[in-house]
Image (tube, rainbow, N blue to C red):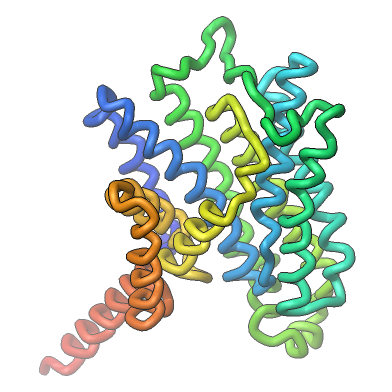
Length: 327
């Protein structure tokens, strides 16, 4: 059986990431950077599933991320719930919010969905501050969130390898779910609705059901990685909804390739590593990022991975044509 090139790329990337700490495990800074790349790259990959494959232009991912993070953090801190229970609970809470947001979006398209989901992004910060009596921590944020624990072993804030491999496992499972959905009959329905809603309806695809399904799945997966983030960071505040992080994740989508799997995930590593390299430049690094976006859109509208796939496909086609032309 021939494996899809997306699956080969996906497995190859995670095998490389699993082996990488063997060479840099003593460099805490690098391991921490890789964990950050895993978190935001996974979020970008789920966002790519919503925008690139389902064709739903949404800005709600950061809201789902924050909801999952806050629910998991509050359950662990205030009620003493294990992180292994609070993290899925955070994902379920984000899923519920996603479904509630998805209901009014069912009959909307394009920029109208973007406006509603952006409203969630804008209103969530003030809501977190107002809900301080409920244990959100208000403007200061939720601090001293318990770490992940396995049996009697508590994950340390200094020894990062357990965090890394746990994050790698969660990222792998989330992207595996995304992959299985994308390349399934349900995923084909998403793509059909994205490319031609009228034609998809003639095939019996229920636009409203599929749209609600997209909101629920993407919100759950985003909330789950947000829940892992809050236990790793040990704290969270409304600043997580800031514009800086939002723009970086958008860059991951553009550079990695919208509608290319697992392009956005790989884009997460490219953008965050580049961000660290350019950090000494302070705010001027965003000028460089702006130039990167312009060049990426002009030279590689399908993203880095999409461009690479096209070059390989062209080379394969030329090689096949040459071999057939030989006497």
